[in-house]
Length: 88
Image (cartoon, rainbow, N blue to C red; front, side, top):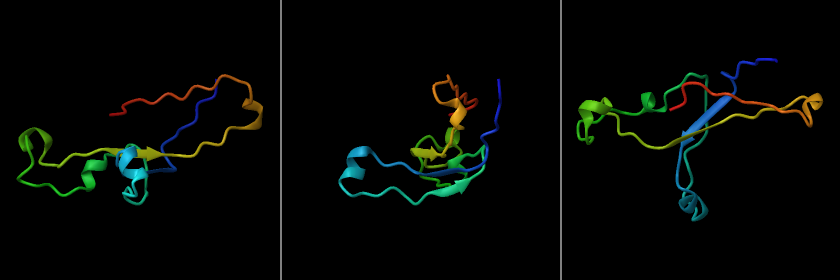
């Protein structure tokens, strides 16, 4: 078994629903990140956030992460397992 670290080469952006995206509401631009990463850290804390005491006063939201993986030709037809640990 071969293990490969997957911490680099990731990007993230604010997520919009598929319906909004089809209607022309664009998500934010992709931002390169190195994992581990917390998308909320880049947001401004606000005193008016509901349940602010338990959320660190971050507004929350949905985010998506993406990374391109190019499998080696010798893996064609083989069983490949991607295991992610600590994903929230």
